[in-house]
Picture (cartoon, each protein chain N blue to C red):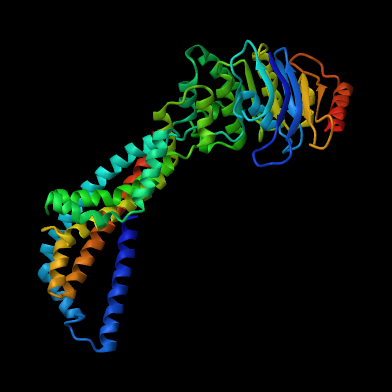
Length: 229
Length: 249
């Protein structure tokens, strides 16, 4: 379980808080999102959860799970070996099959022998996400991890992740209102610093493989998010 | 790379020589002050073999001094990259010692070790070591966050991997720094020979200075320049070959 209580944070040398008394709880596994315009503190909040930012007020409790992993969309793989070689090296032996499945499903089989620098931005982000999914984790924060990936592939990937890891916690940071409304269970909407309350929790459609998406409910969720932000 | 360095040196050298000759003819100076083209050419023929062997002697000392410096700077730089008290101590010490003109210590070295090979080597190594160390510490202590992040959060980061990532990402910079340090090592060796040693091209320049023979000095400068250009060009070529091999491994 993740429990954040009364988190207040401001950047060093700044006079205004990024957020004040933020509370957020994730009790059950699932695919949740942090949503909001740039600069409202989504990444800072994610880094508070992972412990990369420590100078904040409030309390973060992580019970019965490994410390969260944080992945972001500008990460790179070392250039001295091919992607396949790199993935094999960082994948535990028992997950080699899972690695092949993910590579195949994420549409990266044909570029497995390439160098990271030879890939497109979307391919780079997909490879980076795969290597995180192959680690031992209970919670994965995906900070725009699917940026530059086309909508159809993104949809396929999110559904696959939800199918493959039903007992893991995911926090997906995205600017795509349709995506978070469709696939996420709960969406924590970050609002501008002058608005109160500063965050709002909206229930998403939590769409999964094999379920029929209710269009009118989806539209309602999207409206709620837009009104909140 | 190699050809470019040689061309560049030849252009600069002959431009400077032309300027010197222009001054000679414009001011009507005698060949005793600035020798004419013929004197320079005949001196070239007379001293080429001896001076070339002197330059090779100096270059060999410079190369050994440089190799010692590079290994020492890499070792200390790798230790100094850490944010521990020892790392900070190494950085502060390097910055402060680098600010001091090391060549001023040369007389002490000659007094303690005499005028042989060891003194020349030590001065060459000392002169190129501190700038090298500063550059290597700078490169090694700069995190490559977008690559290192994954290894840190998954607990896979080891110091060897950290050094490998930073070296790979900065290989061009490292090559430039090492090639640049060749000039410093050569300068250090020549200065030490000029001050007190009894061998090398610096020693021959000192003799030519006592004889007021500018043509010999010009020949010595030409040979030093050409040799150094070839050596630096080879270092740069080696750097780019290493990078290419590392990338296609």
